[in-house]
Length: 167
Image 1 (cartoon, helix red, strand yellow):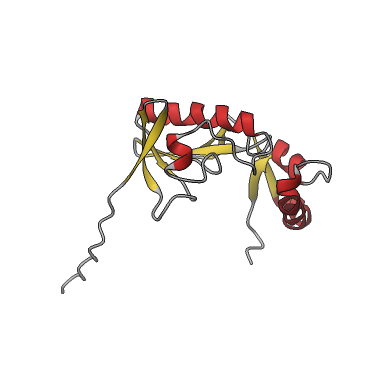
Image 2 (cartoon, rainbow, N blue to C red):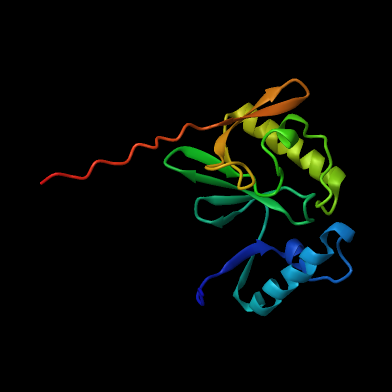
């Protein structure tokens, strides 16, 4: 559909998803689907490095656990920052408030827990907004420290339509 699109991912993730020997029983089907999607497009891929800008204003941060090369993205513009937390959390209450719960679909559940705690702590400490595509719409909010875990506070969305311009 987008013949000129570039695909940005880590080399470690490409290697993980395209290796038949990787993955536990929970994700074997996902490995097969990923191979069917990734292999035909290898010539359009740009391998990104954690800690560096993938494109101007978007920095990839290492977030291993879900996969070996998993990253979250920090988006910066006009003095504001937003973190796309990707697959470090799959539920806005259960996993956020109890971040030590292991997730069966992580390639390394223990590393996934350590990454989740590290990223959530950074977001809470630095007051960085986040977006989670596994969270209810619109998935934008903030994380704060709460006891042994964290808490997700969704942003309020203004649902008032814009008035048409007159004249």
